[in-house]
Image 1 (tube, rainbow, N blue to C red):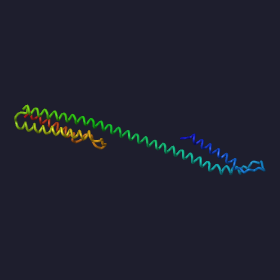
Image 2 (image 1 turned 90 degrees about the horizontal axis):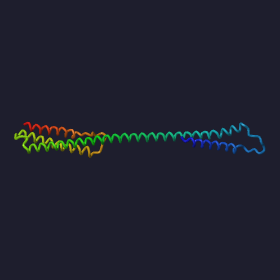
Image 3 (image 1 turned 45 degrees about the horizontal axis):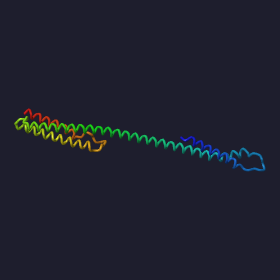
Image 4 (image 1 turned 90 degrees about the vertical axis):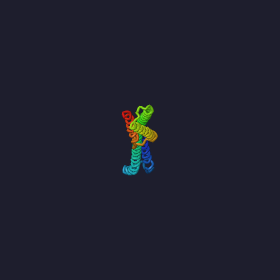
Length: 194
């Protein structure tokens, strides 16, 4: 609150009141007797009521202004807190997206290595000459290539998309890529047993 301003306003009002008392008293040059107390009371009452109303109005205005300022500061603090919480949520979401992209890169690398190993097995004739073994190896190739494609697709969706609060970081295509990788590696391994 600005008390110094209020005190200056009050002192000004009191000085005006004293000046009004001096100048509004009836000039009585013939008589040296002071004015009657009843006349003084009436004049003081007439000047005091409006001045009191002015002082009360000034105090109310100062209190209202301070209240509005406090409400504005409270609203600004609430807005800053809300922005900080949202920034924290976005940062956590970005970190989760980075971890998911790393996991998808690992899935893609695993799929590629598995596919290269199964092609090398086929070229070396490790899978044997039986037709079911070759078919199972070909199915393994397809599953590993599908896992590789889904891993790249999911990586592009997670890494390239903007961070939206209600969209999950782990996509269904990433889960499918993991299961296709496992199935492709299993098919390639079973082709060795046939």
